Amino acid sequence: MIDLYTWGTPNGRKVSVMLEEVGLPYRAHAVDILKGEQFAPDFLAISPNNKIPAIVDPDGPEGAPTALFETGAILIYLAEKTGRLIPEAPGARYACLQWLMWQMGGFGPMLGQAHHFRRFAPETIPYAVERYSEEAKRLYGVLDRRLAEAPYLAGDAYSIADIATYPWAARWEWQGIDWADYPNARRWYDELGARPAVEKGMAVP
Image (cartoon, one colour):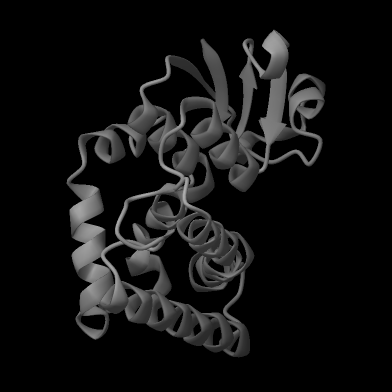
C-alpha cells in the first residue's frame, strides 16, 4: 500500500486523484502546512524540499521501497507503474509530457502567485494583483485554445496532463476567472469534475 503525504491544495490533490484513477491502494497522511508540519524531520527525509505531496511506495522499482516528491515525477511514476494515463505512442506521449511540464512550470506556479496576492498577502499590492491575475487569464487562454483542438490536453485521451491541471482550475474563483471567456476549458473542466475518481481524489485528505 502506498503512503501519500498530502494536504488539501491543488498540488496535493493531483496525486490523490491519480491514485483514485489507477486504483492503487493507498493511505493518506495529512501534513498540516498551516502548522508547519512539512518542516518536521521525518517528512524532510521523504521530501527534501519540504513540500507536499510525497509518496512512499514499498513496492518500488526492483521491489525496493521508493520515496518520491514533486508532483510531475510522482504522476509519471504512477502512470508507468500501472501502464495507465500516459500514452504509449511517442507523439502522444510527448504531447502529454509537454502539457504536464506546462502545468508544472506555468499554470501551477503563476496561479499560485495569483492566489497569494489576491487572497493571502498581508497587504494589497495592486501591481502584483494585476500582474498575476492577467497572467492567469493568459494561461487560461492557452488552455482554452488547446482544448478547442482536442478533447484533452494530450489529444484524444485523458492523461496525467489533465490530472495535473484540473486541481488548479478548480480554484478559478480565487484567480478572478470568468468561465464564459473560456468555453472549451469549461467543457473540459465540467467533464473531468464528473469523474468519480476526480471527485474522490479532490476530497483527500
